Image (cartoon, rainbow, N blue to C red; front, side, top):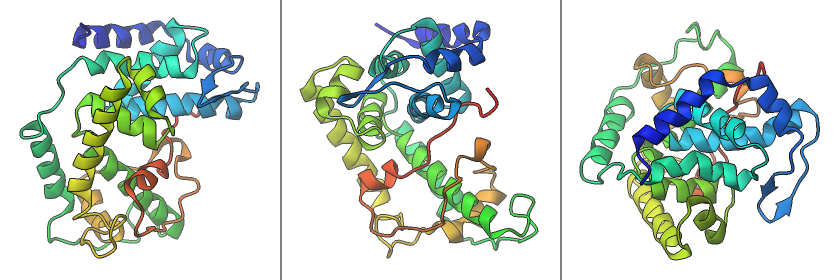
Length: 271
């Protein structure tokens, strides 16, 4: 059975990885995504799109962006020629053998810690001269978007690996149950059960708190941003990941739409 030693071995491969060659290599492949076979162009931007999808999936699955980066580069570097779905499986399967977090123990502690940071009655006004704001409305909107993404990521990380993988594959990548089962190496029935558990757990927590599911809820990104900055919950996002952030709260989004609309994480803008 896969264990943490496998995960550590996967990460160790990254030490010898040439990231530039990985991007060039990925740009020449024909990954299968959804029910369509697509050819990535030689353009770095086009090549980065599917690599960023793979990396984003890894970020949602792993504890940190560093761990996700290592797993992504290891998958692409160690297994040339795999389809995108196969790479997704390589990234997530080392985690699926772990029991993850107990709903009554680890998950409860994580969500309680999140409440302590963001859901207190304390409101801290945003100082326009804050070094991350610099008096610019655009930067304020980017930070609100980053807070939304970071908060939803924190909630998702409270799920066990299999329900988390099933939900991310469905919401972010639009996967059917058949594709989820293939990526995760399980049956369609197990994939469906995992997806239902994920939806139920996320809705139980977010539906009574998050403005994006119900505008009548008390937690609003704009009013929590000052606390998040003060507590160090967010920082300026890397690689202009929120270029299209509008600051709109989109009240009344359903759960899948809410997560599907989050900006992708980007692997290295410099490679």
